[in-house]
Every structure is written in structure tokens, then in C-alpha cells.
Length: 107
Image 1: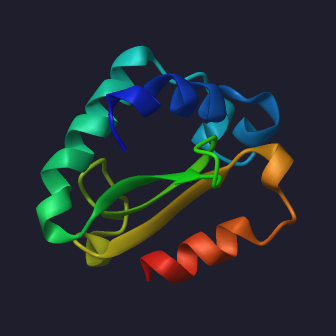
Image 2 (image 1 turned 30 degrees about the vertical axis):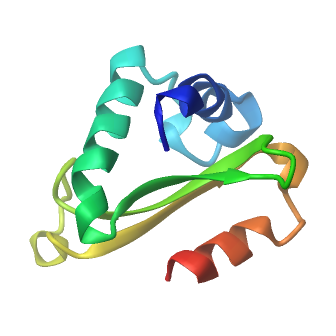
């Protein structure tokens, strides 16, 4: 993901339907998005980070990523350093298999 994806990522994670399942139903602050994209750049050389999911015409459909646990805190010490799959697609893409296909590509 790049800075050009920032408005679409913000809109995705602020969607009221999606927030019921992600982000503890909170509106994330703008600095969270900037820090997340910066961290993704740092993780990229390790094969981790976030990627935009786009339609063939380039429309933003969601995001998928791999991140090490423990960087943003975990209550399970035995999981620190394990890699977590993170995925979010907008409601229009729900039920299409997009999240499954994106997960398979990442893994």
C-alpha cells in the first residue's frame, strides 16, 4: 500500500458495517493510518506488511497483510513474533470469495 491508498483505506476501516468486525467498532485516528503505512514499508523487506486489493480496473476493494504480533501489543507472550494475517474487504465484496483468494495469495 502507498500513500495514494490512504483515503480508500480510511474509508474502508471507517465503514460502519466493517467496523462491527474490525477495529473494535472505533473510528481510528488519522495518525494510525499514517503509522500503519509507514510500518508496512519497514516490514516490506521481510515479506510482511499491507497490500491493497484492487479490481482489474484499479478500484480499491480492500487490504490484506501479514504482520508480526507483539508490535502493537498482545496479551499472549507465547505469540510475540508470530505472524498474523490481517484482511479487510468492503461490504460490496462480501460473499465473493475475495478475502479467501487474497489470504491464499499471501500465505
